[in-house]
Length: 298
Ligand code: NDP
Image (cartoon, rainbow, N blue to C red; front, side, top):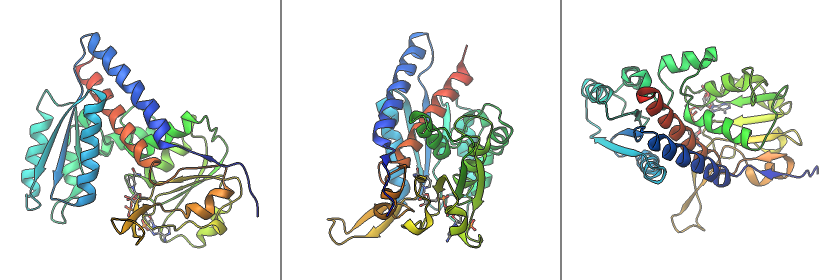
């Protein structure tokens, strides 16, 4: 078996470094008379995973010296009323960034709610104008998870120019923006990108040719060792809860990659947890600080 020197892409290390940078930037910004960044998070219903994600975002605001407001709504709220709440936040001069935790209940169109967010406060980077600007390479808010992955590649000085990059998954929040960022003329970037999804035939043919695989599928341990070229870089976005009788909770989190068997083959790999998830928070916080600066800036 091929064994190469594998390096873990450590979300704990990189996010700590980036959070220190953000803290310093906030202090400098405030010392110059700038406004404390203020993030408003909207949570509809009580999906446990969404509760955990929003809770972590609010906690990070505190840690980094931002203000935050968590608005919770019953799952029965109408789309119209939710859009009214978004509009109220758009018009609130104290709020710099608005995030709507997805998924929303089935009777509410996520697209309509996101379209209602003022683009200057779209710190998740999901608004069509933000996405369009990203596609055109104009400065904008980048979607938090792909942004976090780019920050991680940058931290480890991984030169992706000319690499074959396979992104598995084409969601609007991860897979699709990832393909855009990896193919743009920048570093990291400049990769030759293939986007794969559930209709892709012979996925393995593509992944075996990949220098870097970014897996955003939502299926536990789906990317197995036989699908990976020795020396490849693996970015595992997946967060899947599986049963594990050895844990007190009876379950544990795993990624979309079969880490134990794939890791010995790779040059670099992100763990789950403590990998991409922590970087996503960094992307969101950087966007929120940018929003405050652009909105109130001098
Ligand atoms: P979606 O369910 O929106 O998208 C999944 C994508 O995977 C789809 O494009 C789907 O294809 C594709 N897919 C599904 N099955 C296969 C298959 N067998 N072969 C190839 N492609 C397949 O998920 P998200 O993009 O929102 O999230 C993906 C994963 O990442 C989840 O585990 C989620 O929890 C996690 N996540 C983690 C974040 C983090 O911060 N670490 C942030 C966001 C998400 P098709 O389009 O054809 O249906």
